[in-house]
Amino acid sequence: MTTENKRKIWTAPEIVETYLAFFRERGHLEIPGSPLVVPDGTTLFVVAGMQPLMPYLRGQVAPPAPRLTDLQRCLRTDDIDAVGTNGRKLTSFHMLGNWSIGDYTRREAIALALDLLDCFGVERSSLWVTTFAGEPSLGLARDEVAVEEWRRVGMPESRIVPLEMDDNFWSTGGPGPCGPDSEIFVDRGEAVGCGKPECRPGCSCERFLEIWNLVFSEFEQRPDGGYEPLPIRSVDTGMGLERVAAVMQGVLSVYETDLFAPALRRLRELAPSGISDGASETRAVRMILDHTRTALLAGLAGVTPGRDGRGSVVRRLIRRAARQGYVLGLRQPFLGELVAPLVAGHGTLLTPRERERALEIARTLGDEERRFARVLATGLREVERIRPDDDGTVAGERLFVLHAERGFPADLAAEVLAERGITVRWPEYERAFAEHRAISRVGTGAQSQTA
Ligand code: SER
Image 1 (cartoon, protein in one colour):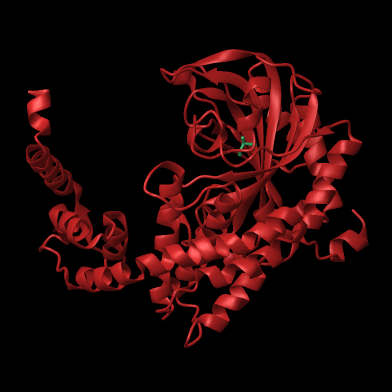
Image 2 (tube, protein in one colour):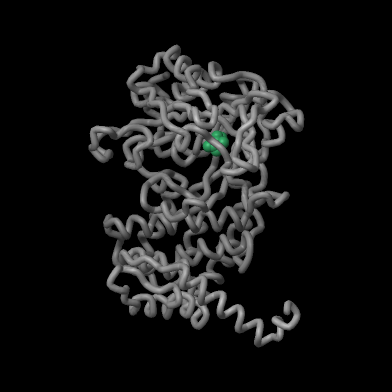
């Protein structure tokens, strides 16, 4: 590690260039990231860096080279509710990856990762790693080889943490290549942690930040949930650019990195009475930045807000972000204003063509937000009037009526209620919905066709 690298503040584009060059120099072929929209429709968007490479990992298609590297934009909303509650969760992110398709295994993957982190100037003494503890009931063995390799490169025993299936066996969540993984964490110090004696990688606090996941892709998850060995053993790694940038730029959250900093400044200017560092305001800022960027990246991939499929994901993000504007005292549409600073923050991560098109996306975002503004204002007033029953719940039917009569989305209403500690009795929502559908059918005579 050079003293120069230790002192250097790396921009996100520099991190990307250095990562790709490092792996190119070590025999990896750089391939372009795939478009964010998955053409075969297996998922709405690319959810993981490895997704476009699945045919290679499965041994179905020969890769252009046994060692690959790339930068892949990903979008996944499965844990959207966690976005904003901490400084690391995002609905879209840039995944840097290096792959061995049936070539090197744990030893080289681990050595390469450590070498690059040295180049990046990340202190070895701040690193912790997790490994797979095994799951005998599924016939999945404890990953002793990964532990051995970490020991070999000098990782102290106390900083090698074996974790269970949920943490250290990576899969897409459905059929596909999967396997035990070893995750690399940076310890950002006790001062930012929860202070619990058992705090360590895997803890939900801000102290240990996972920056890189090395997946030893060895199994295929069958549709019935079982596992069978893949014909080739590969390595699939993913380094979250936003997170590693936070580490290398010495900031605690991804929202303070160069990627988001200009948009954060703009948001502060726009908020009429400043932004305090209270929990709900911090969450609002993060949700706005995250959701707007995701809508921008989806827009650049050709997705516009709409009722169904991908468009509905974007619409939901815009509406959630617009609602968080209320938390910051913003009553006028503002999301379009964040696009230019987001573009500035992303620098060369966007192509010149994308930078041009961003203007158009800013307009689309603004139009969508304006169309929703009145519904948002009246809907929020209605939601405020909702009083919970004695057990702190509210009938789902209330939300159904709010949606049917005012167009206010039930999930958004539920989110606002959750902030007041109120939960929704969803079965009553479903019932109201089913009844409404039955009535509409009678109205259109549709029931006679099915009778
Ligand atoms: N597939 C793993 C992930 O997305 C590593 O690339 O985290």
